Image (cartoon, rainbow, N blue to C red; front, side, top):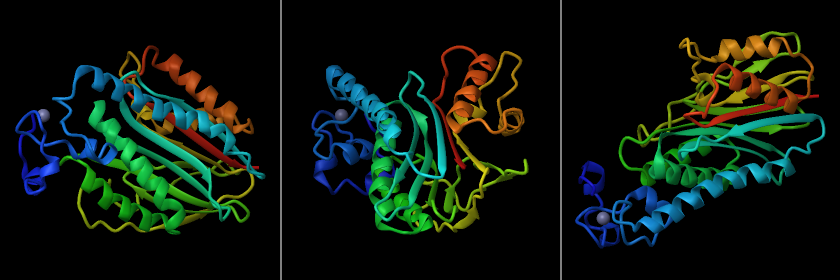
Length: 289
Ligand SMILES: [Zn+2]
């Protein structure tokens, strides 16, 4: 059952948000994906919950199966490792050529686990997918997506999102980073730089503005995007596979195709922290050839 909070109290007047089985409210996360749901997650029959869980996992697997079509982009080499944890959790990513020729690069993480986090992830993902081609600026997209996210989330839910728009001919990448782990950029010279946050995580405040930054990728430069399932994976000694570790290992593997790099790094992580991951592991790499 839901505890009426400040957020759900605003919705008391909207009858369709009340659960038909209990006195609580239907979670906004659930309504954002199934607007006609009459019951809350707690009151949903076991069989329906299981089906929902399965569907949410399928949405996630669909991303992976759609990806191989996308990166056939002349002059660019893309690599991906995506290993969802068994529990429903919140990583998502996208690499997609828009109609105007730009490449959308996206990685994000909805904090928390279970059905509400997975529903929010699905909602945020489709909101970003719809906004990215319409709105040219990644910063404006994040501002709108933040408002949509707040409308569809229970209080206290947060998500980090890095969104980039790449001009594949010029190598110019405009991006906005809403509190996501800064992607690493390895220059062909071997120098590293980070694409730091340009605003806060989504879900914290209604009217957040994001700034936008631009970086130009030259031939041989490698961009590395990842989720905290990578950097927070611990070995038995309590050490983590952090950014420094990622950079150190990539320095030892120069010039390999992006997919080989992504797979090697994932294998090294699996050796470093063996067993079933407790969080999704996402690693996306893009090199200008
Ligand atoms: Zn209920």
